[in-house]
Image 1 (cartoon, rainbow, N blue to C red):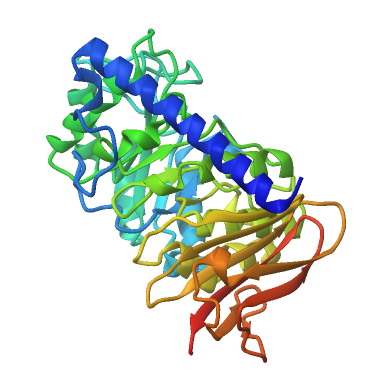
Image 2 (tube, rainbow, N blue to C red):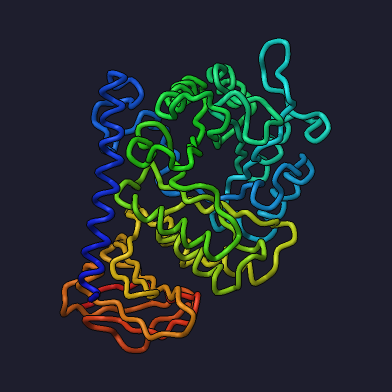
Length: 414
């Protein structure tokens, strides 16, 4: 089968999947009188219900879950905040310090309020927020749209949305990750908007991260409800998991934009399950996908190699580009993939990804990446931090190792 035939089949498959997803939501809207969808128009718009101004670019920070799971405490969170500052990550834009599951007692107090777990967070969450804020950082917290969180060690927010939102605001919380476990059979299109309205009434802007796992295609309706939405199940620290999730997230590229972002889950860079080159691919795809860049390793004890990946200012700049357009795969030839997307100032980012077992010569053609065929560009390699000596015209070729990538920003000059 030729390359063009494969590309046509891939496009047809994507269109069929998207049509099926839209049909599912239309049927649900008809059955519920549209109640669960916030708005009769299920296509994304620039406006969203939350409209809190917190997501002009994807969020950057750290989350406790990937490395620590439930083994968290206030000392570790403080030390992490200290490390984000001392390593220079804070100056690069990593601002959110996000506590995941297992931070609260198993039951609420007599007034129905969350209670921080006394054995691990004895000073309480407000004191921790104050500490993090004094570092120039922001504190995030975790809850669930069901009756209990996924760990089943603490309550969820179902039925307590207004109360919990006000509690989070009073503590100085800046970010809420909202999970999807123990949901009692209620659809996310019903549960999540309740917390959206509660956050709007809480008196403090709080970034709202929908962790719905892509169950009901939240990219199709999330822009009305939150600032980001998970498009996939949880990532694991393996090449296969990371690339599978990248594929799934890319399917929804057209729905990401300033104010609301597709979320393929947190970064595994530095956790040890992949090679250096694989982590570079991981970070590069997340960057061009305008994904939240939430570090998932222990930044208190981080290798220089990991810091060099997470701290690549040029790659971060692609993620934070104000145009806010998610890149897509524009060509696939077996295990060789060309990803590309527009940037501000008429530039284009190009990522050559070799998923195969051996080194290969790869080419990005201008007609695939959206440049006029005779355009000459200045090409900058973002991982070597230098411009190519020659100015490519019509296409750009590079040799790419197995499970590795090359990343360029192209600036037209003629």
